[in-house]
Length: 87
Image (cartoon, rainbow, N blue to C red):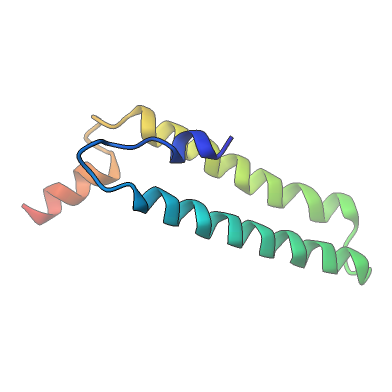
């Protein structure tokens, strides 16, 4: 599901930025899942308390990216704010 908002490409802009964001997101996600798995294996936390926060965080990230892509012409979009700061 994360590939849908990251697959959006503006034809006038390079395509590598979304690929880098996707790669970093996957690396961070896998590391957090491995840390979570290690804490469960060591008995520090229970499976239920260790599993859902990781996936909830990713779900919130996916929802934020979908909202970000839907409101491209909003004056509060990060790229619009950035262009206003540069001007």
